[in-house]
Image (cartoon, rainbow, N blue to C red):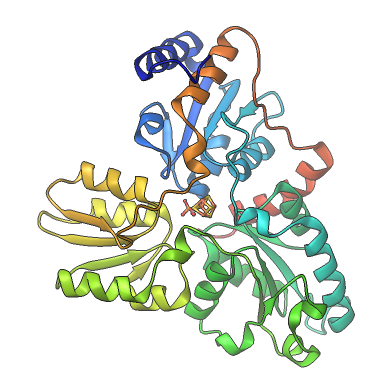
Length: 362
Ligand code: 13P
Ligand code: SF4
């Protein structure tokens, strides 16, 4: 029935439900959500800020997460046990998160332990520290919690890698090869010391020697939105707008990050633009809903997406106002729809890895 309702009815339902639920409800929204959804969010942020926001609303009975599945799982892990987390559309996943499954990572870990042995070195450091990007399943965060590892987001990846190198000789970084490579390179690690792990090949497609000299072993995952950005697009932006400031998300391939002026999380991009002045020109390498919103908020500047072909994150886009209205109406009627529940044993270990991240210096 909600699919057939016109937009104005959906919006009225959302407004009424928000009013009826009051402080019992908090709506969180990622920057990539469409405007029709973002307008209802009590807090909009990047993945790290949204994880913290889940912690800072202890009075809300229900967190409705307008984002993707791994974000809602993280909120459920960090929230108080009495709080429930709802993802308005359960089909809102993340194709990158799906590129690392638990079995493949477990198998890779076993292979690596064969090569390195699982005894710590004389200086006490582990042979390998697993680091998972926030964009991963709760099961992989739990894996990291169990094996002395940690979670990172795009806003704290270098801090987290430093944390990992204090405790380990190497890092296994999953699922995003680009964030891993860009962050490690910025820390001075040579790309020669970053072999890629392909779970379909023996030893991930590497020789033992490659693995013995490795500093960061990169999983073969990527984001299909950010891998579209190219060095040619950066060159075109510079040709069209001399003086343009090019900022890209670190999920972009390394040559694109190298060609840009800066790389940073969605909140880094937002802050850079908020700090700009009239007449500034920004070319941005990230999802289009966010870029268009920044341009609408700052008509005194020119802000455009590097990719001329519209590139939304198709899974974020699955949070349609119809799903938001349907889940909120359910709450008003006392029916919980689309709850995300992480099993206790997974949540306990995943929380260890998330809390290590939250405690690592910002
Ligand atoms: P941020 O942490 O920068 O918001 O990134 C999340 C994400 O999924 C980017 O594709
Ligand atoms: Fe996942 Fe890419 Fe969408 Fe971010 S933009 S949620 S990494 S598919």
